[in-house]
Image (cartoon, rainbow, N blue to C red; front, side, top):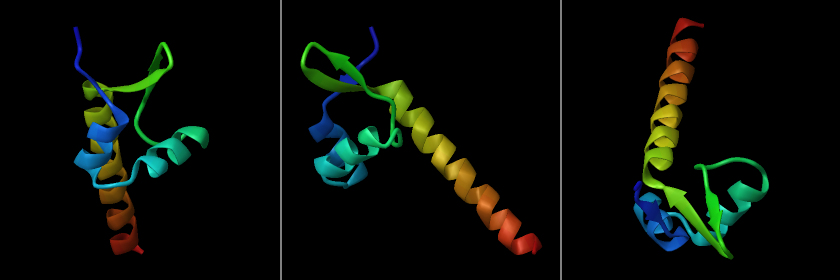
Length: 68
């Protein structure tokens, strides 16, 4: 079974407040989250993929700025 992280764990790992995680979720942004009963949980693999995509997007933007 995949490891599920709490909002507190994800906030600490990303060094962002939980309120940012909740705001991102409300606007359909941020790492994928699932609801387990009344609790929000973040699958570790989804968080890692989301971070990799952020890094890829940042590299792409830097490359585009450098080519302009």
